[in-house]
Length: 219
Image 1 (cartoon, rainbow, N blue to C red):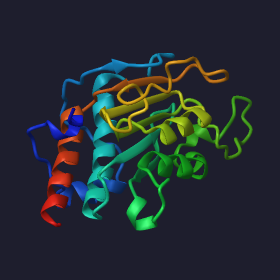
Image 2 (cartoon, helix red, strand yellow):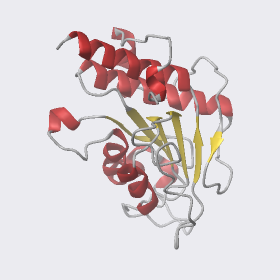
Image 3 (cartoon, rainbow, N blue to C red):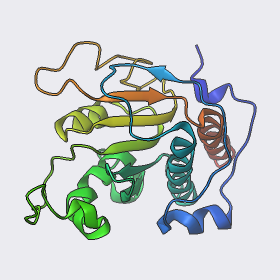
């Protein structure tokens, strides 16, 4: 059985414009009709379908950065409960020589220090006191172009994320149901994460297909 990203008859290569947007704020994106797959269902995600598309476009822009660096083109952005992108990341496994440098983990590592700086509403607790930096990212939603692997999904659980939205499924390593379903059994201390797949699936899958086609021509 071929991986899902190899059966999409569409090629998407990174452009100068897409790479230059990697550090910009969210932009309006072309609306696509997602194929929605719910796995472990918690509270409703705090954003609508059109907003999901816009945030996913930001993750796709990060994936273009990875593509340009000859990394597997996977990108991610982390959005706080107030709608601000508080961290961005793309795959850096080859450049960092680090098997754990996946786009999702890059986001989770950057978020604690960046959250209060980027989002004023995240700086204070309900009591009005300053909120210290914390690895607990409750209320945040992770947008990633490919279904997270078991390592990244486990990290999302440990970080207490409220939601994950991904683009294309990954039948080789996807841990949200495509390869294994890490969320099939209720987690003992964090059972309120919501996972939605298929947002801008075609674009995310096409970028992967284009990358591996390019790599084959380089051999």
